[in-house]
Amino acid sequence: MSNEEKIIKRVLSGVQPTGGLHLGNYLGAIKNFVPLQDKYQSLFCVVDLHAITVWQEPEELAAKKCEVAAAFIASGIDPNRSIIFNQSQVSEHTQLAWILNCVARMGWLNRMTQFKDKAGKNKENVSVGLFSYPVLMASDIMLYKATHVPVGEDQKQHLELTRDIAQKFNNDFKKDIFPLPEPIIMENAARIMSLRDGTKKMSKSDTSDYSRIMLTDSKDEICKKIRKAKTNAMPLPKTIKELDTMPEAKNLLTIYSACLDEKFESIFNKYQGKNFSELKEDLTEVIINKISPIGEEMKKLMGDKVYLQKILENGSLKAKKIAINVLQEVHETTGLN
Image (cartoon, rainbow, N blue to C red; front, side):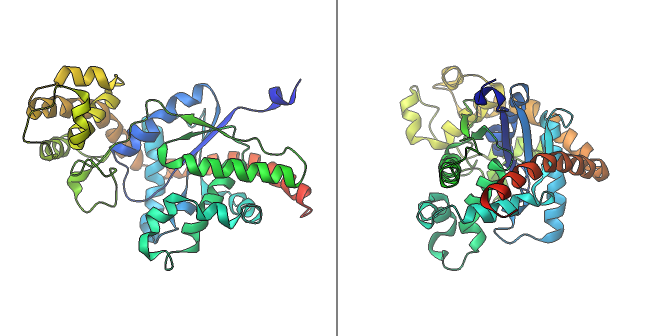
């Protein structure tokens, strides 16, 4: 059997337990995790260590971890088929991260555009964790020898860094310990923008509640938010090219397309030249049909915190079994054993 055949096809991804989960989180990531269970050994992580790179209220952080687990399960991730776990419960993440900090180079981290975007003009006053968290992200992936990682546009650079670190580690120690993880470009992953500003991503940190649809929103709340979504005074354009100057219109059509798993062009053709009121009415129904069952199941699961905590604990034990062996191999290779 060749080395290539021995490699377990394994996928890892994570979601931060910060704020509530919204439509953008679901359509852009969680929804697309579900079919991966059929192709890969799958690990889905609640990345609370990443969350604390910026201040989190402790009680709120603890509650949000269960909410992410509930969203995973309600969306179709099966804890009997996949490993759902809590990052901080597997101490090997931070142990490997320190070793990888000694492999990674400052120049690599200085090129990370997401740090520049998040830190802005305040980069001298943000946490060291915010600067170095791409190394922890590399540790998350490498600790399980993940061969594939689902990525969106804003995570491609971080996966490249992971590949660089894995390659340098293998070269430095002349041993092929870590596979170079391949990106899974999620073709159906939609980049969902704010309902109030089509040029900005839908975000939990936006001051306006009307900028986002939460997974746990009621049908009435969804109706109200779509009704108040920013649109143009003119009807929808007759050509797709014109949408470049109408980001809010493009966003509503993107949400519609992603919810139904239909091509954007076919949705556009259905509404080209029509009034926004017609699009909004139909879109509201589409979102409710897609999101409400998930929200209701999440609320049901959140009513049983003991069950969710048990899922995370059991998942963390399964993850730790893999992690211990990999870290042991790293320790032996680096002389730390």
